[in-house]
Amino acid sequence: MKIHLLAGAVLASALCASAANADSYFFNVTYSGGGVGVQDLGSDDILSTTMFAGDDFTYTLTADGAGEWKVLTADEVFPLIALPTNESADRNVDFTLTLFNDGASVFSTSGNENVSEVHIGTNSLALTPGLIFDQWVLNVVLNSAFEVGTSTPTDTTPGEILPIFGPADVNRPDVVSYSATGFTAGVPEPAAWALMIAGFGMAGAMVRQKRRAFA
Image (cartoon, rainbow, N blue to C red; front, side, top):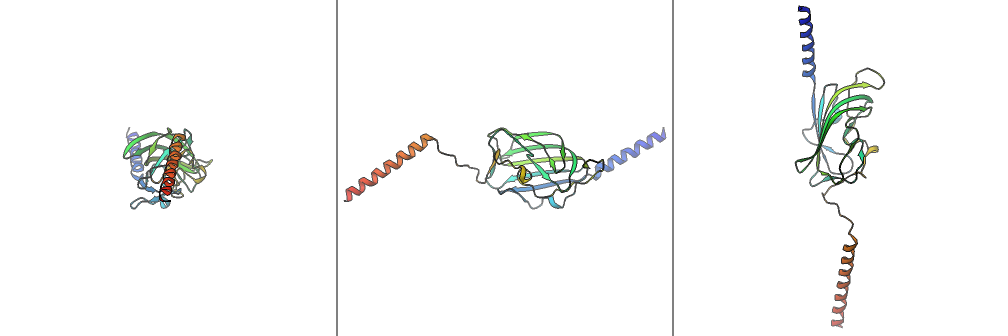
């Protein structure tokens, strides 16, 4: 009986020690267009952070000024939000992703993902066309990371400051667009074109009449 109690105490102590050793990181980035964000002062350094199983991070990406993102069409973005990594590995994560617009939550999802080899974050997500947001917040708990094809635990080091929706080769600007001003000029409708042309014609006629009056 004493042996079982002692073993249980040792196991509980080991679990507590493991939990106590887990680290939390906070990556805060401002985006103003151009494919990559800029780390804010006070943010943990993405490039020098090494994570192990049990660690977690919160990644907050905020549009600069009046900037915003708009979902153009119903299609999957892969990965919608993720950190590229220096090491290939088979990873398992728990994640929660929340999108905000003017401080209010407009979209939220969570789950467990097996993310293979080159990123940590979510896998494919589809967003509702017309959705507008100016900030997204991702929390990820790294449950495990193993070298590809083995059972050898490995660490996870982010490889770069995140391009807006993941590595450049999987960006989907055709699905989600970014406007630095928060306003995207639309193409005038045919009726609007007709009014504009009529207005130009009237202005031209007035100019001609004034010229005749002075002749």
